[in-house]
Length: 391
Image (cartoon, rainbow, N blue to C red; front, top):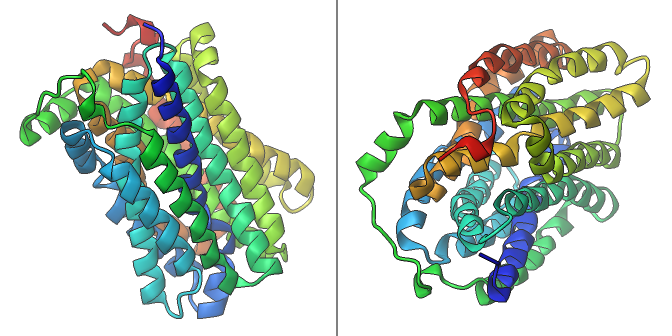
């Protein structure tokens, strides 16, 4: 069945909203070391702030996904974008750690509202080219997340931290336009079958393939978050400017966006399992190269860092589509598990990773962390070879 013009318009605005939402989510990483110096807290406290925010926001994404699957209105995607665009820019001007943490939690909570329902909407509006549309959606978010660091770092360095809250206007405008052009699914001919909360989560958590996909997502998130949160502190300590750090994160995430866009095509040629294997294992040698070159050959280290962004994001669209194919009746909930719950699990251990990095060195810890996804790649052998094999 061909995608209708109204559905195509909805997909365009969902992609725009995703790019905007994730741009705000990327604001803090490059400037967090400078906020730490400005307010007065350590790298461990910084990772704790990010961890608390991700636990509060990401761990509950499956719950929002449950309500999104049953309500099917635009309330979550609208208010999610509003929360993210307001509170994260405000957090950059917080006078103390407490207010910074509150703003970061509320801003990330917006992402928790937005993502499960938006991912479910992408599935429902995609009558054809499902994997392709999911890849574009993930790419839009990754592009936004890559632009966020360079936008916040540029504004902070050239105009001052006090000007960052003005950037909230963009998110509010996009949210209003999205609300206008993305129709309510409940007004279409799709019949909504309301689900029981306990049964929904039982069906998901008792499915072997879903548990493996959740573990794959956790491992992928562990290495990407360790890179984007810890390495800015490494570069600041080496004397690099906010603009350099923002540019490095931009290209890391831009490479991830390119990987997301190509993910469906690559999966069709080599199969989903090989995509997962490559994404989980290849970061180990790349992190080893980064460890051995970041001091003596910074250009090689920079290119290696960008390559890690490509590798870590390559599996994301394939993973989401496979999860929705395995349990099609729970599109938003499984998206919440893959796209949010895994981030929350990683956030729980991120403070410990930050403490180890402060004690033993950031680059060394990144290299050690990269061993964990490589070990867990063993679980991939139990997944379907290709998405098309899933009934």
